[in-house]
Structure formats: C-alpha cells, structure tokens
Image 1 (cartoon, helix red, strand yellow):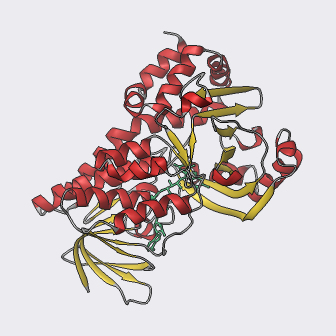
Image 2 (cartoon, protein in one colour; image 1 turned 30 degrees about the vertical axis):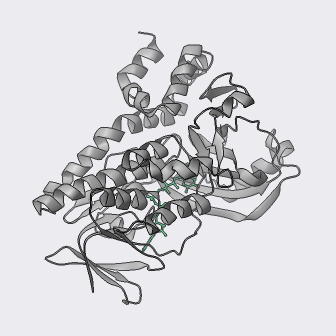
Image 3 (cartoon, protein in one colour; image 1 turned 135 degrees about the vertical axis):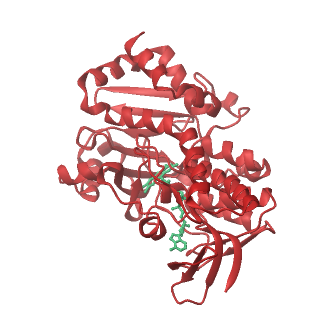
Length: 414
Ligand SMILES: Cc1cc2nc3c(=O)[nH]c(=O)nc-3n(C[C@H](O)[C@H](O)[C@H](O)COP(=O)(O)OP(=O)(O)OC[C@H]3O[C@@H](n4cnc5c(N)ncnc54)[C@H](O)[C@@H]3O)c2cc1C
C-alpha cells in the first residue's frame, strides 16, 4: 500500500495543473493515470488564452518552451461564429499583417491533445515532488478513517490518500459514485470529431471556425486548422436535444460534409485520417457540489465545460490550481471534512460562475427571436466586436466584462 497526503487521479490538463501547483507549494503528490503518455483525448484541440494564463500563475517556465514549438501547435488569432445568415468575426489583433504577427505574443493555440498533454506530462515527469504512475487504471475506492484507498483494476496498486483530487475526466467513476454527480441531458453534450487533411479555406490568422447550423442549434459544427496541413473537424449538440430531434451525430457530420455548402466544396479533396470518434462534454451550465469528505472534483469530473463554446481545458486548469491551493490549507489545518473543503467550491464558482452564466444565456439565445435579432444587430457593431475580441484575448478584462449587467446594458442599449 502506497501512502500519500494527496493523490491526483488523472493526468489531463486539470491533473497536471493541480500537481504542479502542489509542487510549487512544496507538497508532494502521486498522480495516477490509466494511460501511458503520449495518449490521445477526443477534443477540438483548441487551447484558449486561459490555459497559458493559469500555467503562468503556477510557474512561468511551464509554457515557455511550448510558445516556440511550431511542430506542436499553430497560433490562432481569432474566432468566427458563423450563423446561416450572419458571421461574427472576432480578431484578437484586428487588421494585423502576417509580418506584424511574427512580433506578437500568441493568444490562443491549436495543438493535438496527443502532443499538448504529452508536453505537460513531460513537465511533471521532471518535477521531483510529483510521482507519476502511468498505465494504472483506478476502478475502486474505499473510504476509511484516513481518507480513501484507490485500487487499480488488478489490485496491484493500492494508494491510501488523505485527500483525492479527482481529475479523471468526463467519465469519472469517482464523481458519479462518490461525488453523486449525475449526467443531466440538459447540461451535457454529445460530440463526434475526426482529423482531416487537405481541407480548403483559412488564412494566416488561423481563426477557429464555429458553424451554428440550424439543425444543431445551440450546438455547432467546427473546423480547427492544425499543424501539418491537418484539421480537427467535429460536431456537438446538447444531449436532451439530440434525443428530442433524433439526431445521429456521426451520420449528420458525414451528411454536412457531403451535402451542405460551403463544406461540400471545402471537403471535396479532403482525406479522413483515422475514424470519427465520439465523446461526452459535461457542461458547466448548472452549479454542482464539487467536493466532499476527503475529495475535490476538478475539470470535466466537476462538469465545468463552457456551454457556449465547449471549451473545457482552461476551466480544468483553473479548478486544478484552486484545488491545489485549497489542499495546502486543508493539510495545514489537518481538516479534510466536506465542510472545510466546500470553500474550494466557492473559489471555483466565484471565479467561473459569471462567465458560465453568460455562456448559458447565449447558448439559449436560439430559443428567443428577440435575442437572436439583437445578436444579429450586434454582429455589425464595431464596439461590440472590439469588446468580444478583448474578452477572448485578455483574461483580466474577461473577468470584468463577464457581468450580466454589462450584457444587459449592451443588449438593451441602456
Ligand atoms: C469532442 C470534444 C471537443 C472538445 N473541444 C475542446 C476544445 O477545442 N477546447 C477546449 O478547451 N476543450 C474542449 N473540449 C473539452 C476538453 O476536452 C475537456 O474539458 C478537458 O480535456 C478536461 O480536462 P481534464 O483534465 O478535466 O480531463 P481529461 O483531459 O479528460 O483527462 C482525464 C485523465 O484521466 C485519466 N483517467 C480517466 N479515468 C481514469 C481511471 N479510472 N484511472 C486512472 N486514470 C484515469 C485519463 O486517461 C485522462 O488522462 C472538448 C471535448 C470534446 C469531447
């Protein structure tokens, strides 16, 4: 039996952020992952500015090399929200030329999770206070006086921890069984993604493309360009609506590529690499209890994905860092009770709830004609576009601007 104060279950971006923040505070941890890295994770591979922002708060060294690794990532300089009758184009550096971009610090990235997660895991492998155990799938948990014992499938690994930081993603057994986090179809999305080569379109700004097609509303179809001429292409939709509208996402994606313009033309010479793969997205559109006696849930295990954009890597790192900061307090106080750990829930929601609420509101815009037409009007409003651009590129500004009052004033012109 291995004894540890803190066990981090899962070495995705959330688990890595938690273990590195713990190490920075001088606290050792065991990180356990069922995979042996490099491993794939079904994702859109878009990494927003929030991710380097959080890692830089832990340690500026973590992201330093990544910025110059052109083999691992593309820089992205904008987002396009494309609706059947309008397009909202948000450039982080409006009007900038290709030459000028060379001198700018990138805001967002596109990097295959196979590469990105491996980059992060390589980093924790060098950290003496992190003991990473790869290829160990945890399948059972036992509560005892000290905390939890985590058992691997064949019971060859048994970890006794005072505190478990649960970072094992959307299908977390711990979150379901012990955290009592249930899948709520209104707050969960299904998705399918595939890699393609030779997709037409795009330019040096490498904007990420979100296509809001009528049948998928409020979900979307995406095209994200990657290094080596590849593109991450996918489709996602809320689970309750998938059932209600009887949509088969795999069939729908193939249909869009074959039948709908402009995709039909853009994918004429495209080549599928591998196969279409599906995975779930636990959305942060409702508040949940994300801690309990001797544990804190982070990232997808805590259902923190942005319901409008599907972005979850940033919130996994935010929650991972907070869990580590609060773990340090719990160790100091030698208090791992649900009551003490509930302060972690407050830290997470104080930071994220405003933006999750705004995203939920905008996600539901499709239901309201007045809101849709207001958004249409705003799509041509220069000030609105500049503000949105700042929200995507400046995390501090995003914090200030994600106040519902701000949006109320903007929409109603008050
Ligand atoms: C199709 C799709 C597209 C998406 N696109 C984007 C996007 O473009 N940008 C974005 O920001 N977010 C996107 N997301 C969301 C994003 O993938 C997640 O929010 C993010 O990966 C969450 O990170 P995490 O660390 O919480 O969990 P994960 O990244 O899922 O990591 C969990 C880790 O736990 C390990 N694990 C699981 N079970 C066990 C076990 N029993 N024992 C041991 N280890 C275990 C896994 O091997 C894995 O390494 C997308 C999601 C999907 C499904």
